[in-house]
Length: 118
Image (cartoon, rainbow, N blue to C red; front, top):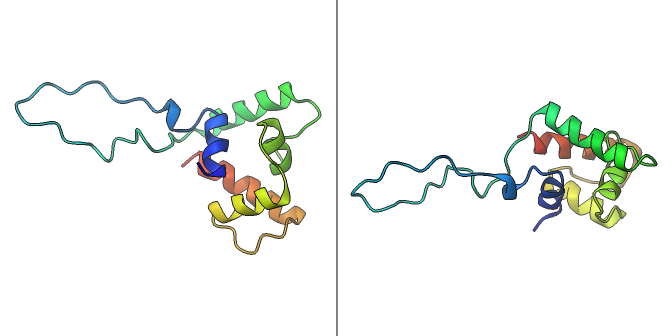
């Protein structure tokens, strides 16, 4: 499982929350796997849902600012916030040349939240 998947799962956005649609009508045709059903893909969340989850994390961890900081978001979720872990996360979300600068951490945080809403 990738780092991004772990984040989404802990935010309650991952595939564990995806639910299949209502059962189709029975037919004489053999069942065929629906690869577009989204059951294995993370379910996107609205900006409001993500904001509410971040606010809840901030309330549970008043010493952290998960709404603004990738390090604090990872800490609030109980995940490794080390440079190496963030560097790997940056690769997962498509940020090249991650060196851990404040500006890059802001972009990483934004990219993770963007991925959560896709």
